[in-house]
Length: 327
Image (tube, rainbow, N blue to C red; front, side, top):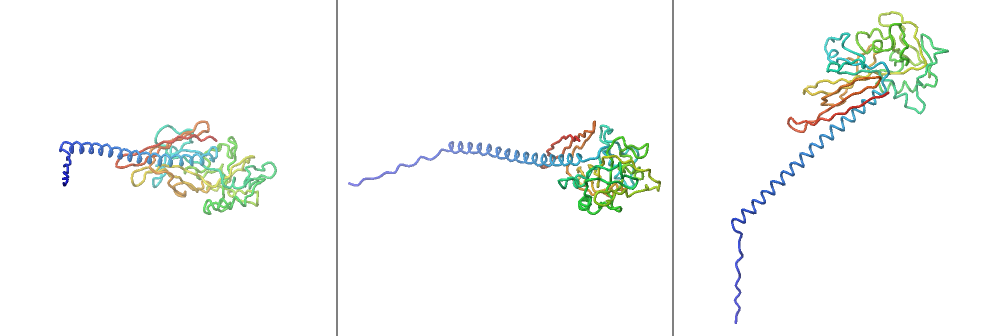
């Protein structure tokens, strides 16, 4: 007797079940896409915050390092636009000692003379000692600095300045004596007025002295007269001094895109009648700067630096760093 096998028909999904599954899949897909978009947006935001925060921190630390080597009494603020115009429209109000800078947006540039820490600290024993033998052999023409190795100093300065300063009478460095109350002309204490940091007194740089190397540990003053051929008085030399090969400026400037870049000017020598606009080396320190403010109180410099980074269309991420520079 043969057996007859009967296959049972499979039950199909109803239209309602299919619609229900499609609705659930749509909801899941919608939620998943929103999560993916949110994760991507968070990644873009966090990456931008990290990038701009890192760059701002690095630049702020670089500013602190440079200002740490400023020579006391040389730090001033400027109205940068007065010096950018051609011809320059500077006046007595175009600059102020940093400690006297008012709150506002006018004085945007900070300028100072930095002492030469590079050659000073290049060896275990400093290449220039910072001590002047002023009691026994100092004169109008120069002085000795015991414990110095000015041959090394000349080599390092030449390399750093691309040959602009090599401790010769043609390309001298500069000496500033350290005492605040010491002065060379009776009415001129050591301050920016007599250091060549502002155009109206470039011909009266009577408390920053160009020096050339004289042997291993001797300095010779390379300027006997100022630019008006007025004989300079005998120099009052004190025990301590600072040696410099460059002045520095930090200046926010608007670029072609309408953004503000923080510029660093360096490698210019006010004691040779040079200024930062015409003679300094110019480099972008930080792009897209939104805030750069600074002040000084009791010799302590405080500055705030903010920068932004675009994350698409008109959306920007901004971060700020505030630092204090204590000498």
